[in-house]
Image 1 (cartoon, chains in turn brown, red):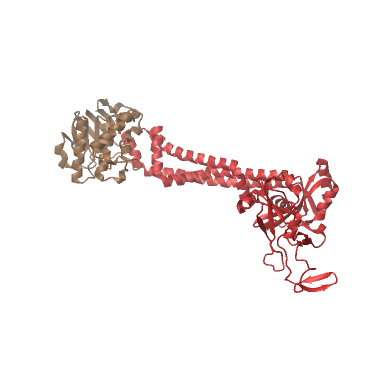
Image 2 (spheres, rainbow over the protein chains, first blue to last red):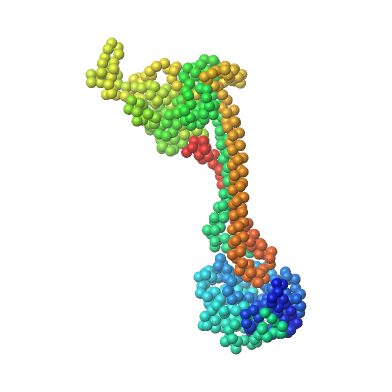
Length: 221
Length: 393
């Protein structure tokens, strides 16, 4: 599912580089990426998803060599194959919950917003327990509910891979466990691979694989 | 594009106050030149139409513009008066029809216009209800007067003398409404028309009172020969009725009674030229072509409009810059949203499309609103503009 080989990345403004000699994450795996702040966890997600392009090396994600794709092709690949969950959720206050979940469909012509998509969004909302709030605005919801909307938005396009960047960082312990349960449950149900950045070492025993980004060869702040 | 428009619409709808403010600013920016041009065109057109419909105008020497404005648009300008003899003089030439005009008085805030029956035929004014003037003390009112005051034939209206608080002065005269005119969408709609002699009575040049020959002793101060002097107890009539009409009379020579102007309708072009020749060297009077005066005024309006246009475009430029600034700041505040779009896989083109859709919706709405207001004013605002600009009400 994810395979990185001899990858070298350096920010153009300098000051940070990341080297990944080899990394493999199998399909359907629930993987966690850990490491101190500034170790390159988010950069790793950006490379895997094609947001950033490495100077050298090879990156295969969901069976596609993303490092060789053009910027346009990388965007198209990303929106059709990858679901994102952000730490700050990044929901849009001017859209209701249903439209927030369907948001990716509004952004790219490769995704078709039809009745199936709407039904899938509603089903996900029901599975995540937010179907009562479909016509409400994000700012009317609790943190936990907003996190569930963000998870639904990541899953609605039925991606092969879900990348989550500290999605439980802003949640209280009880809500955190529940959000993780829901995310795992949905990824299992839809046979998705999950790579999640986390600082919470107490959660690591729930993952199939743990990637310590700071231990990758050559990674230097 | 549909999705971009949808997202743009949802965003604008969510931020209604900001959107409304921007749309209104743009509407004013876009609509002001349109409205201004429409107003200018309407004013020039309506001024010219009435002036062109009045071949010649006789008045005292002085401001030709004031003469035209008072005699044609019934706006009191305090012009010096001619006499009835001047109208008779024109009539006597046999070259033209002389229509006397006595203006400057008011009846319940509407201009009181003393004239002759020829005026109605000359302007093509037709009676909507009732009949034409027939007797002293009667009036025919314009459509706006009838609608505003709710008057019909059979009702009455009081004149508003300018000497209301002068105890020795003129008292209000009650006029009988005998007819209402059909709308003509001009100054005639807001006028109260009376016979010129009724106008003279209204301004105190003629009056009616109790017969002194039969008056009781306590009314008379002295009687000597054929002359009787009455005291303030003498009953003065403030209404001309069939019973007291005979008592109304004018003091002094009727030929010396004042006229504000005389509309001169020449029999033909040659008669017009001859008449103008007769008055060209007149030191006290002027016979002018109103159209010529109004064309001069229109040229001034046009120059003024050009200056206004420069001001409007300057304000417009400032508005456009403000709009641009608000949009740029708005998108900077939405940096997180833009980053999310990019990370999810949205193309730059799509992001630009969404931003453009917001501008398009706001500018489009403003254009439609501005065009709508421009259209309404150009097609239906003539009367309103005339009221606003020509009559100052």
